[in-house]
Image 1 (cartoon, rainbow, N blue to C red):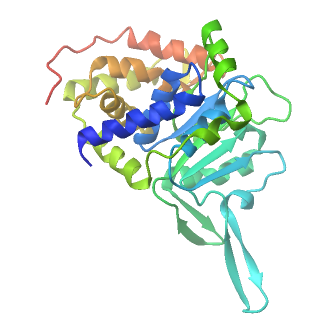
Image 2 (cartoon, rainbow, N blue to C red; image 1 turned 45 degrees about the vertical axis):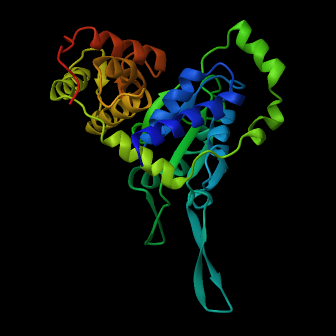
Length: 316
């Protein structure tokens, strides 16, 4: 795929989603950044802020397979991965695919399922495969999980374990609408039919091509050191109980390269790291102040302010 062709696809994706998800241009850009980084996304915000609509709008813009799982306390791991069923006519067990065998998986209200069920996604998200009764099945490429959760609801919910949070490249919030944006929503959107009006603008090969283009974006060694210093400081901070994992370091590198690409640059800037660090790293740390994501993002920004920003010519 040519560089210019890739940018054209990104622009079409953004335009498509912004048709129905009003006033969330920034979140849309971060969602697309996450996807072409090869990662999964966790959308957390109050009910009714458009999290599910955002995920469905991306799926409608993408000519690949889409599955949705509505997470509930009685959901079982087999409801996600699939299971083997005995066929009396043949005397054999047949594998019945679960909804995880797809390209885009919407895990709606993921924190309503029990930890046992949530763990059924760990192998799929981390290794792009599922194992059922000792047999491993490769997932389709690309495989993208977009999960939603509502932070204000505590009854009947289970906090995501750190191992699962670490598998999401970004933890995003939808944010509030301005008066103008909310009025525009009333004038242009029928919530029940919003995602139906979207036509696909890319396919599986296009997404895989975008991933390759993003991976080839140049990043200076000084900026790699800048990322490492940031991550190391999360591990040596009196306010942080557990710092960012090495997986978080790798995901931040991938994310800033993808972010530079969708901003029409062939190289990464320090501002890309500053912009994305709080979304890629905050949910990976455990603090003594609790689980509030905004508090964690502020901690990441405070750490960034203590690190000297390198000054170089960033082009290759």
